Image 1 (cartoon, rainbow, N blue to C red):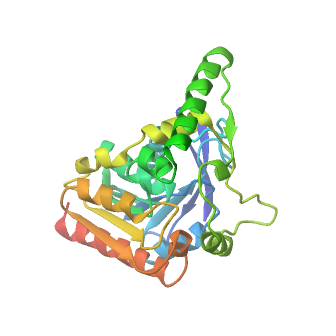
Image 2 (image 1 turned 60 degrees about the vertical axis):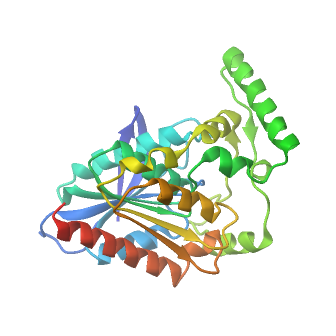
Length: 298
C-alpha cells in the first residue's frame, strides 16, 4: 500500500494505491474502488478488499471523497455528479501508473459509490467494466420512498428555502443522516461490526448540506446505464437491504444493455455485504467478469 493523491476539479484527492507484490510484471488490470456515503478510504474493510484484489493480480485504488477525510473540498458537500468526476479523475491517475494496463481499468463501488460507478462508466469509454454493489438507481425514489406525502412536501419546502438562502449567503444548511434515513437496529448492528478505521477516526456518517440532498434527488444513474454497453456491468444487491433496497440495483440492471448480470445475495442486509462469505463471493464474481472481458480481447 502506498499513499497517493490526484487532483479533481483542482482539489487534491487523498488516495491509497495497492499493488501486487510481484515486481517487473507486465502491466496489470486495475480497479478504482468507490466508498459508500461515509466516503473514507480506510473504512468498511476496503484495505482488506483491495489486498484481496492484489492477490488476484489487480492494482487497486481507494480514495477519500472530496470534502471528506484527507481530501480537499467543502465539508458536508456530497453531490453525486462531483463524485462521478472524482471517479473519472481516479481513472486518469491509474492510467498513468507504470504498472497499470490503461485498457483494463474497472470501476467497483458499494452503496453510494455503487450509484456513481455506473454513471461514471456510462460517460467514460476508457472504463472496461462496472461493478455496482448495493446502490440506488434513482435518487428521488431512494430518498422519498419511505416518506408520507406530507413529509415529502416538507423536505421539498426546506430545499426550496435553502436554495433561496444559498443565493443570498452562499451557505447551505446541514442535515443529519437521521433526518434522511430510517433507523433499523439490525442494520445498525451489522454496520457497527463492519465499520473499522484507525484509532481515533470518527466513523459516523457526517451531516450533509441540503444542496447535496437536492443533487441526490436529481441523480438517476439508471437513466444512463444503457450507455455502459458493450462493456460488461455487474449489479449486486442484498435481499434484505433497507438502506438501498434491491429495487435500486435491479432498476439499473433493467435499464442496462448486454452484457450485464444481476446477483442478489439472499437473506442479508446492507452492511453484511462487507462480511464473509459475501464479500468473498463478490470479489470472485468481479474477478470472473474481468477475466471474461480479457478473454474476449475487448
